[in-house]
Length: 263
Length: 201
Image 1 (cartoon, each protein chain N blue to C red):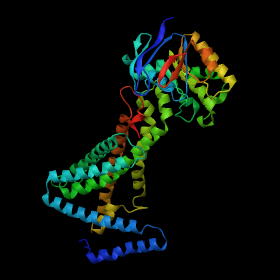
Image 2 (tube, chains in turn orange, cyan):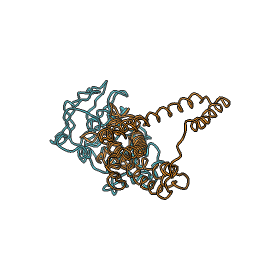
Image 3 (cartoon, chains in turn yellow, green):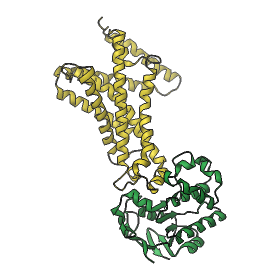
């Protein structure tokens, strides 16, 4: 079975639904019609652009080019991680922490999958490496930003409790442990929800995509299960890394709580 | 009297430099307007805020020991107490819990307070319990930030009596207070903080 290829006309028909949204917005005074139009236009442009970029990189089939694209994707994800939390660390620390934790989690999980389960020839084949890194990044980005937001917010809120413990002679690690634990939990909740709901509430995107592309449902399901495991691993690693690094950043060799490094 | 605590050229970007010598079993009371750096001074001695300079306790320099060990000996009790567990008793260090009930009783706290939840405590109860928590660890020096700020007169007298007893056993106290009577009652040395500088009063 070959996938059904879409014509520009097919897409234009679907685009009429955006017009429907815009008309609704005008009629109901939602004041969203410009936002919807701009968002739809952005989406089309971004996706078409990435389509051409992917086609180009696939044609190069060069590990360095693949790596550079993944690097750029990680950088964009790190920016999102840095920007999401209400509180920011001073300087560019949010960005650095986001980059290290997102990059670390994505590389570890993607390389594990590419060298064991999926095993394309060669293992860095961009047809596999780039989409895989993209899927993992989405999940890892979500976990990392939730964890960072949770950690920075709770440290700020719990300052008196943390400093009370430090004053009593507890170590920084002991005093900060509850906030680190909560932050990691917060980062893992989305993937737990996703796994619990998979197949009942939602038909996950990759599986749906592969079925639409003509793959046997059970083969698609196997892929989805593998991906869910990868995503939960990636989420765990990034939540752990981001919380740990942020906790390190908020102390010094004298085990103080350095809230002056938080805005 | 031999000195317990010696502060030399202690300063930060916000306050100082400070010089102070506190004898074993004596009390220095600091008064002064809000925002003049009184709390900051205590926090710097406890090494909770970045600072430079030397602090010595019984001929041992602060920098020669890890910060947690220092803070166990020179213990800061904040004006607003901090709590991390729901049950009161879980907020006390595990090794020192046997000393807690008698001390709580001395300060007029109800007998069941240790099994209450922190949310049920009044501000005054929290303040006294935070002091109990520090005293149960037997630090050499207590850095008290307005220890009786939220208390009624009866409780204030109980706290003052307990602190005097501790001093008789050799504990040294550096305290910030807004209460001039308390400063003259407890303070062997009196200081006034103004704009980040300490003056002998």
